[in-house]
Image (tube, rainbow, N blue to C red; front, side, top):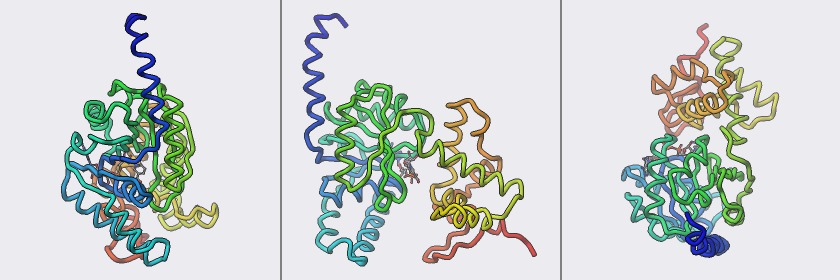
Amino acid sequence: MTWVAMQGTFPYFCSQLNNFQMSIQQVAVIGAGTMGNGIAHVFAQNGFSVRLIDVNNAQLEKAIQTITKNLDRQVSKGTLTEDQKKSALSNIQVFNEVNAGVSNAELVVEAATENTALKLKIFQELDSYAPQNCILATNTSSISITKIASATKRPQQVIGMHFMNPVPVMKLVEIINGYATDKKVTAAVVEMTKKLDKIPCVVNDYPGFIANRILMPMINEAIYSLYENVAGVEEIDTVMKLGMAHPMGPLQLADFIGLDVCHSILQVLHQGFGNPKYAPCPLLVNMVTAGKLGVKTGEGFYKYVAGSKDLVVSDQFRVQG
Ligand SMILES: NC(=O)c1ccc[n+]([C@@H]2O[C@H](COP(=O)([O-])OP(=O)(O)OC[C@H]3O[C@@H](n4cnc5c(N)ncnc54)[C@H](O)[C@@H]3O)[C@@H](O)[C@H]2O)c1
């Protein structure tokens, strides 16, 4: 680009960035799965207008049912009124196409399946259809923000917003700066996160960021301990719950996150750092291949029966005796 052309672009570019100071009101959430429905829930509950987008209509229906059920629980606990619940639900509209869903968005939070090729494709689409000053955030657990940003012509407006599961309950949002993320974008996202009654924590873009760089090796080590028969499922989880005051053992947490998600994050860490210490345990690989993904498929290290809160070890790991 010549200097003459740049002279024309620079003031325009700055005025676009200043727009991020304005308060964000219109939000689009891409993906209505485990995380997407929770993210839509917290935005809607805090007065934002939300467009929830998924390619799968059944998933959109299920998401609205889940959000309604979770809001009902808040009403029954007395943390929300019936009117607040109605207002939250009325703030959500569902869409099954990205282009229509993001047409008026000031912020997009992408929470689609953890797959690099898919996310690059979605961000290319977002770059085409989302308004020019719209901030594009991703809830990825581990894929490089810098890489996702490279699929767009506005890498300065791409940022990680890593919500924790379950979103309506967990306070932390890990905010991840990509290599090119503009500081004003980070500031706008930090301010907006506080409006969701969440605590933002800003980190930089290296594999696994902070949360998963530390959590996933612990989960993998717990799976290795089971694989090497050092202890059983309940023993491993009990040591970490009672000994380290963790609210949930690492194997139960892995089931909750989804074993496929854990597996793909470990692969990102393994490839990203080139260090064999991050290689997924063969038992985890086997379980993912066998479709035992944890809570979402009804079985992982534990068995999950609809309506039951009992924690029952999967038959595969029961000690015979
Ligand atoms: N599950 C967790 O505990 C957790 C925690 C933090 C972050 N994350 C991240 O959040 C993201 C979503 O994870 P999840 O567990 O909610 O996954 P999920 O499988 O429950 O849901 C993903 C959804 O994305 C939809 N989708 C796929 N392609 C799409 C497209 N092109 N456009 C719109 N929707 C599309 C699917 O239909 C599905 O409903 C991932 O990046 C994951 O790494 C997950």
